[in-house]
Image 1: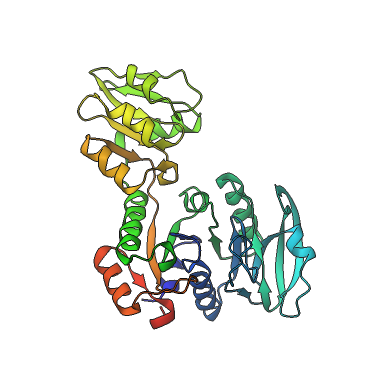
Image 2: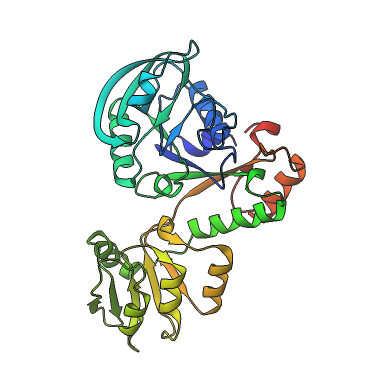
Length: 345
């Protein structure tokens, strides 16, 4: 099955995130763009940072440019619009200058009127990304592709995008095993089990109000006097009683906070966060807390529909493409894995 058939028409928004810089996000995005255009699907393109420039502004390495066909709706910024002088640049008609500010100026919506290369950008928060996506759809985009930048979390939030593609690349580490295990860890976070069905609504309402509460076996809630759950593990732990059943965290789930909560907790206690973009745990931390009996749940899963692999690093080393593809498929057999450069998809 091709990538586009995994995505459209079932989903109308997809985020493309990477395991590291130069993991192959733009390559994956360009493949989706090409396949969508071949089927006549009108696209919307947006990034959580700035993408499409010829060289990475942080690493100064060459980047694959983003090519857009006539009719594509793009989100960019004022600085990028003002710098569009390259003959290979797409012709863009400005549709709207939004009120969303970035360090490079306001977010601008445009429509490609002449094929060419584009720089895409957008706001950083999940709520504003979602609003811009809605604006692009109202302007005619049938499928919106969100290119995650260094902040890879906002675009993958279920509130923002209906599905997510993970680009895994050799640039993460010279060790193939490390890349495989890090990718597996990301998938495990993104597919974290949901909270019990009977508590989902109450937990979601609590988080939307920015509150942290403890709910007992009888459904009675006890609010915690803190503006955020971050660094409040001791305070939360002190409020846990033998009949506590759920802890709903309004903010991020960090190692220190979770460790304080699970140390000496009652058996069967569920800790609930909004989604995996709120979980900040590396592989060893997740393993350690799991051994302590942590039962971490989410209100919404992140829907990972595919993984792409890039066996080449801009630092000059590479993995055997066939071995890398095979081992990624063996490591994460539940998700389709593609090597775009070697086999297409």
